[in-house]
Image (cartoon, rainbow, N blue to C red):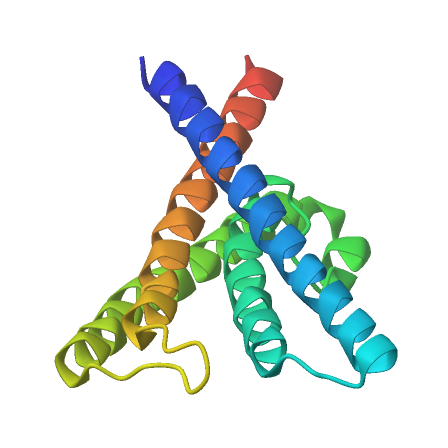
Length: 165
C-alpha cells in the first residue's frame, strides 16, 4: 500500500518538476534570445529579461534539488565510503537524515520568509512580481525535497530488505 502511494506521489512530483522546469527554462531562453537580437540588431535592450532569468535560476536551482535527490545526483563526499565500504549503508542513511533536516529547515524558514513578504507586499523592481511568489518556492522545494528523501530512504530499505531476504 505504502509503495503504491509512493509511486503515485513520485509520478506527480516528476510531472511537476519536468514540466515546470521545462517551461521556465524555455521562457528564460526566449527572453534572453529576444534581448540579444534587440540589443545587437536594433540597439535596444529589454530591462526585464535579466530579472526574469535571475528568477528562473532561483526556481530551477531549488526545484532541481528535488529532482537531484530522486536521481541520487546530490553532491556527496564519498572518500570514507571508498576507504571503508562496510559503512556505506550507514553513511547513506546519515546523508539522507541530513538532507531531511535541511529540507525541514527550508520548509520552516522559507514559510516564515514567504509570510513576511506577504505582510510587507514587496515586489521585484522591474517585473513587479510579488516577492511572496519567489519566497514561496523555498517551502515548496523543502517539502518536495523531504518527500523525495523519504522515497530514497524507502527504496534503500527495500533494497536492504531484498538483500537479506
